[in-house]
Length: 240
Image 1 (cartoon, rainbow, N blue to C red):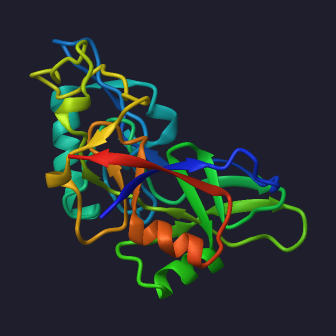
Image 2 (cartoon, rainbow, N blue to C red; image 1 turned 60 degrees about the vertical axis):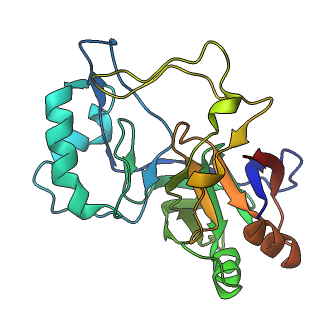
């Protein structure tokens, strides 16, 4: 099985943009050992926390404020029954459907950020009908500027695989022993995937060390090509 890094097609002819955020976000952690813990990339758009008693701690306006490691750990334990099974809950994780505004013309896929992948309803349904595993998301709560608003889904892509240690640079540092965060940079020039960690039951996933990196297997890439879907590119990665 081949695997690919998912990237935005910078040459897309579509002009669509989305300006919005999820209603809830896990705050950054104030770690007494390493000086902090903040993340980026993880998002669970299908989660509904409207009845969650502690949701005030997760309001987007509070996401820039740090909480103690102990408060963070307690918050995660309360959240686990409400998020997908086994989903990491790192600081910066977005929860709930994106709310905001959109405009322009959208194609098959749209990258709100390199790690935030959207698909049109038609695209998502085509991929699901073609047998893609674990592919789902939530429709955005978006005000559209113009006629005929598109139906756009924020894809919920979970962490399922890891890099192989052979691609770590000499400057690679072990995660903080207290909070688990690290300050390493993604080896963008020569990433290698650890074949023992890659999922056999999902076709699109994120890397455990770098939640901002989306990986697709060849089943997903073949489906995209067969269905002639655009606005997305793939770079094949080595696997060991």
